[in-house]
Image (cartoon, helix red, strand yellow):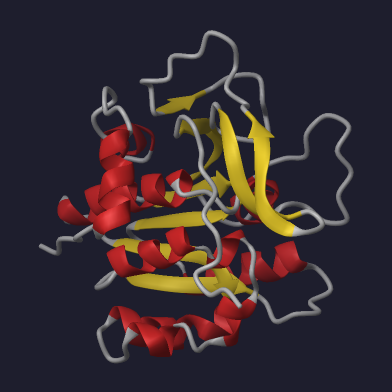
Length: 253
């Protein structure tokens, strides 16, 4: 049975989060007893969301579940990333890929920590080449080609892509990634990130640690880390990470 070892910062972040709801694995297995896809819709550029996702992956791996992880990076970089995860190249070589030069939340220090924690796990990128006419459809087709048919596909992607439907009044050029794959596969859940406020590293328009208001509903039970149901038809449920802090790029000029 494989075990993941969370390095320094990630350990501190995971341990700092209350664990009253003991198991991400248990919460998701209740909804998907045999196999399926769970999409974690994130706010890019935080420390806490990649840490939460990493801990959830670890639970699945340590319980012997077949798992494949999908991260929001170019599908063409999957093999290069796989070389690092298999121990065939070092971290400097991993970071030599052009994708790490994009200084947004998808290439943050927290995301690098996530890569370190996922050594030995199958990880795939599923973003089509730049200039795709429909990025959500391209992401969907890339995912469907690479997913596990039997086992668990755990996906970390931006919250708009993660949606299973458009929200009230939303107008998109294409259906979201989550909706696209749900229409073409079984057993798909999508969870959106809740947080109580803080900062995230974002480029809007200048790249920096930007303050964000919280999106936890008034009176929410923060100890409940994963929940389902509610009135938001865009998602199956949510995962809560508490206060967020900004994670700057892994590479900085």
